[in-house]
Length: 282
Image (cartoon, rainbow, N blue to C red; front, side, top):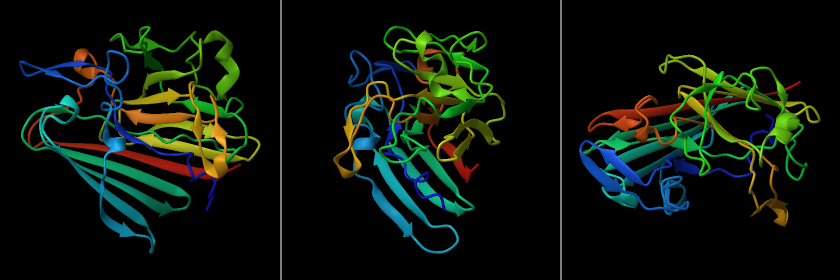
C-alpha cells in the first residue's frame, strides 16, 4: 500500500456552485453569499462544515469502507428542497480507492453538484511544492471564467493555451502565462456519463508515485492552491502551490448556462457521482 499517496493533505466535501440568484422552475431562490457576491462550495455553512452521520464503518476485510449520511433541509443555505445524501469511501485493494456520492431530491427540484476537494502532493508531507509534478488532463476543452472566476458559459479548446495538458507536462511549465496558477474546469473527453472516463494522471518523479483519477462526471476542476495558507501535520504550514486539487464535477454555475450539462435533480430522482483513484510507483 502506498500510504503517503493515499493520504491527502486534507479533504473537503462541498456542493460546488458559483451563483447567488438561483432561477428554478419559475422561482428565484436567494442563496447565501460567501465569496464576494457569489455562493461558493454551498455557502458559508456548506456540506464541508456540517455534522454527518456515520451509517456504517467497516475497517476490516477485502474492501474497508465508511458510509456517511446527511439530510439537507429545504432552505438550507437558500437551496430548495430536502436532499438525502450518502457518501462512501472505500479501499478496493491493489492500491485503489473509490468515492461514491449519491443524493436524492425528496420534494423539490434542486441543483446537486457534490465534489471531493482533496489536496494532493505525491511527494508526501513537507516535500515542497507541486510545480515539478507531471500532470496529464483528459480534457480537450475548458470553461473560461470572468474576473470573479464565474464561468462565462463558453466551452473552448485548450489548444494553444496554458490549459493544454493533453500530453503530460509539469504543473509549473506554463505558470509564466498565468496570473496566479490554475483554478479552471475542464470538459472531459467522452460523452457517456454512465461509463467511467479518465480525468487526470499525476506523476511525481522524485518519489515515483503516480495517481490516476477516473469519474462518471463531465468535468474536473484543476486547482493549484493559489491562495493556500493552512496549518497541517506537525504544525507545518502549507503555502501556495503546496498541493493540487482535481475535483471531478458537473460544470460550476450550470444553472445559469443552458449549454452546460444540467445538475438539476427533480423530486424522486437520484444523483450519483463516482470517482476511482489508482495509485502506483514507477
